[in-house]
Image (cartoon, rainbow, N blue to C red):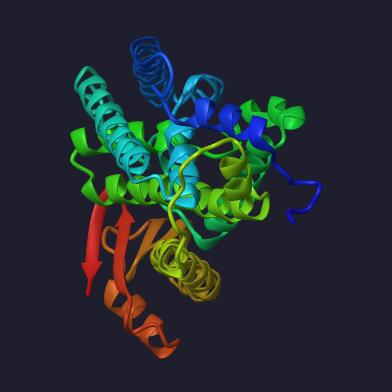
Length: 329
């Protein structure tokens, strides 16, 4: 028997199905409302990202209706409703393409590229890490719990804010238009992570809530739920976790390199009467901004110093004298 905290009855299943199976009742009215909200939320999200406005982006999250068909996928998986699963999957895919297209078109209106280097909204969505999956799973649980319990459904707007769906897709379009394919893929990974987390936690909570029994009680025809279905969902979570773990490792490594090389760079700068203005790490490249009196710094000496400190595998880029750059592989 399902836990009383989560238990659903025959009346709940109709409410949940109406909420998340878009177009299951009045198809024209429901779908038209969904499309209007999607297009408006995409426009608001793209504008908010372009303006680097957190408040505007949050507004887009609240308006966005994408949570409905995503949770619809979870419901269809639990009930083994193949027609509704297909419809929900196609709706999510079509919605994602539409939002990316709107982001791309709005990016074309900008005179400046909308990229991570100059925009905090973009920077926060193009380098997802493992902690983003943890947050998405927790947020997905809240969303699924609010779906099961009608008395806590008022928390769904907060869930929409906490789990970012439309803004990452807008970032995909904007960064694609700006020629930053790697950043676009990072934002797409964040969206995929959030979708996977919502579906996985939705399936888990809907099974625990006794949704299948409630559906049978309400006279629904449901298919046989096999372990293979649950295995595919678990595999999807593992699949997105791999690149996220890689991203987390990269961030930790870059921070370690930054901390370890800073002392070496400061010592070299003091010896040569230079000042280190800024140090950053991008993959295997150490980028150093420095200021000094010499017309040309001794990059060979700096290269040797870094090699002796154990950083021979890093490329060195030294920026000095108002943007003049020296490079050492």
